[in-house]
Image 1 (tube, rainbow, N blue to C red):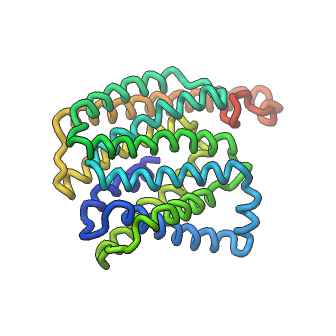
Image 2 (cartoon, one colour):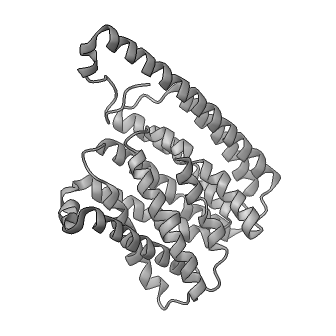
Length: 309
């Protein structure tokens, strides 16, 4: 998940290298290249069975695809309207939305440490947001567009968790990319992207989006939704750093202070989580040694197949 956030975080700095592509055209090309990369990957994986896989996915596949479409479109469009920091800070609302949806939709008992981490990370984000949302109506519009990302992300993670391993939801990424490209093409036409722009956007479509998103979908089978969303906050810190180093978008002191609080919170939360998982594994192993039949009994846990922690 750390690798995923590192790859995701490159979108802002790369978008600042573009020469002539702007607005909807940026979103169209990135989504189009993402769709091409995913189609090639799925063709290798499934061959002629891909259409049947799409039909068999059912409602979770298409809901997830719609949410990926919203995220793909809103994120890049917002980056053309406001600063990288404003977009990423707005996206940080995802853990709160995800935790609430997981609690009320899936019945997942969110661990106390995760709630505490969300509160402290949220405080850091609010501090950053309050001091960094500037630039007039353009910045406000960009932040409002970016708000579609955490809302869609929360819904998407819940869908992925609920489906578990029963449905291969990687094709949902392809659906989302195709839908995003189709929706933005009319507004992007006629295109003005230079050859250099197309190179940058191809890199975004493949390395910044297709590859990490495939990894993230697989990770949804192993990590609880609230923890995935919390770890995804690292994209904020990485993304602001990239934009500062590679595009000269120097963040204010408040951004650095808030980002430091987020990083510290994430590190402490994950350290506590690792210790808790280690204790649970030791307890389960001891129980199985005392009672071999226990290994074959299902773990009691919330809806979605993950043991309560």
